[in-house]
Image (cartoon, rainbow, N blue to C red; front, top):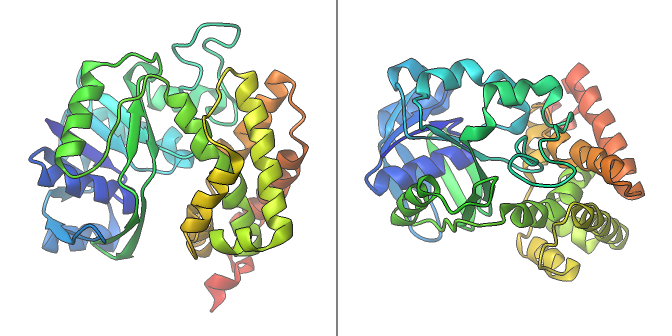
Amino acid sequence: MKVAVLGAGAIGAYVGAALHRAGAEVHLIARGPHLKEIRQSGVRVLSPRGDFTSRPHATDDPTEVGPVDHIFLGLKANRYAEAGPMIKPLLHDGTTIIAAQNGIPWWYFHGVPGQYAGHRIDSVDPDGAVSAALPVERAIGCVVYAATEIESPGVIRHLEGTRFSIGEPTGEISARCTEFAEAMVAGGLKCPVEADLRKDIWLKLMGNIAFNPISALTRATMAGICRHLSTRELVVEMMRETLDVAARLGSHPEISIERRLAGAERAGEHKTSTLQDLEKGKPLELDVILKAVVELADLTGAAAPTVRVVSALADLLNEQVAVNPQLNPQLTR
């Protein structure tokens, strides 16, 4: 099995290292000091489950890799539309694109019956640009339940979780999903193939939709947001509204809000990916997390008042930092 990891950051390099350890032919596509260090010393994973070093091929040029069986997409969703030229050299007729993203994916209404079949979510797939770069028939969904960080170039700190749930948009338990899942398991990861991955999408989104923007607006960790009574109540209300939107689309995650909160508290003083991006002056991955849910609320007639307010505030923050990164105190220290 030949796999390319496009966007070999914290999650991508971790997955690539695990797959290579399992014997898959892995090619990491990265850049900058991270790429240089991986070429010299491999990927070093520091984990409570045991440290290991893996030495897959690494490059910044997909044409060096050629067609692969699976592309594991470790890019942020806000970079998907521009990924076409990087994807093209990696494709053969059966290549899959396994997108490990937060929030609502561009393929969400692909392969589903009913009134919304084939509907394009504009905030996720503006003018069809993402679908053009990442054809939906190649898509395999992936919901990540692992927390990792780049500790230094070439060094990945695995904090918790090893589960990467995957699934076809159609709900089929396909041979291509099974093949990839078996390789992930051989590499020491959990990779269940789900018949209804949309439940997992909403389950994770319950946390992302609240903790990610609130952390960016307040610079607080997940545990800090939970400890503060008012923000804890805000999280609960955003989760309720998110579940309402999910239910109107026929999805019912089997978890209580209190249990989801407890899981967030166990993460401790962890900075969300959105807060980490803010501190690095990067664009915030909020369209697929917040704007998409507002758009789906409009589509289904859900009120979602709290989600709408937080979305507006977070969107303004994103615009302000994009125009003037110096507004972020972390960048001026």
